[in-house]
Every structure is written in C-alpha cells, then in structure tokens.
Amino acid sequence: MKKILVFLSLILVHCVAPSFAQQHNDKKDGLVWTTDLMVAQERSQASKKPIFAFFTGSDWCGWCHKLQRDVFVKPAFIKWAQKEVVLLELDFPRQKQLSPELQQQNNSLQQTFQVRGYPTIWMFYMDGDKATGKMNITPLGSTGYPSGAEPGKEEVKFLNEVNGFIAKAKSTATAK
Image 1 (cartoon, helix red, strand yellow):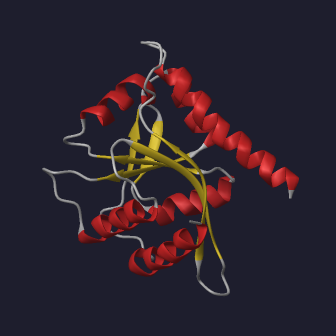
Image 2 (spheres, rainbow, N blue to C red; image 1 turned 90 degrees about the horizontal axis):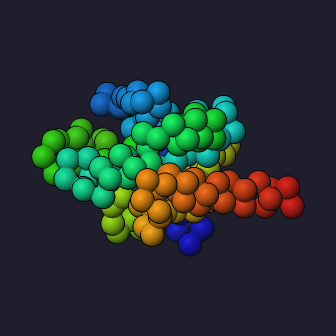
C-alpha cells in the first residue's frame, strides 16, 4: 500500500503543487483548518506535527455534523488539536461548488487513502525529496465517528484512538 500511496501522491503533487486561490484558513472554535494540502504539509514539517485530514460532506453528511458536534467542538479536542496536529478539511459537498483545483486535490487524496465513507479521518506525515520533487506519505492511521462511545463522552474514545496513532508513530521512530 505504501508504494501506491507514494505513486498517487506524486500524481497529486504534480496536479496541485501550486497553492490555489480558493484555499482558505477557517478558524472555528479556536481551531485553524486549512483546505490546501501544501499549506498543511508546510505547517506539518515546520511543527513536526502530523496532518489530521477530515474527509467530509459538509452540506449533506449527517455523521460528519455529528462528529463535529460530539468531538470537534469539545474543549478536550480543541486543546489536543492545537497541541498535536495540523488540521486539513477535505470537503465533498453536493450543493456548493469547489474550485476545480480544490476538487482535484480532494479527489486525489480520496483515491490515495481509498476513502469510501464519511466522515473519515486520516492522520499522516507527508514529506518531499527536494532532489526529485517526489512527495511521500507516511500514514499513521484512520478512523471515523467513535461508534459505541458512552453518550456525551465521544471525544474521549476518539482522542484515545488518535493518540494511539501518534504514540505508535513515535515508538516506531524511536526504534529506528
């Protein structure tokens, strides 16, 4: 799968390498979300934090809205996200139109990570080889809505899972 991710990331980089006009930073509840993968990658490299990619259908996906209500707006998540990750929103709306460049970026990442349902979260690192211009994606893990969580405690189950991705990545890096 890693070879596929590297190959597809190469295609993605060649398609959307320049930042595009519709890219924005959206500050919600004290969190800064970007829609531009290259901006997220730059922030990730500068901060040494993984990218937290939220695949959503902002204007139609009920479970996406539920994840935002039950997890993303909770103080524990906000504090964790500010400290631990770079936030990237990858939207697949049905009513609003995205720029062709943003659609292409989001579709490429959807294919790269084989996203088949929403909401889906992928955490990963992405780095480039300056000599070749190739981008490599190192996936840490994926998740969705924290089903089976105690009502009102969804963020606890969610944070335990995503913290596990980070801990595993750190232990793997230490072992090298």
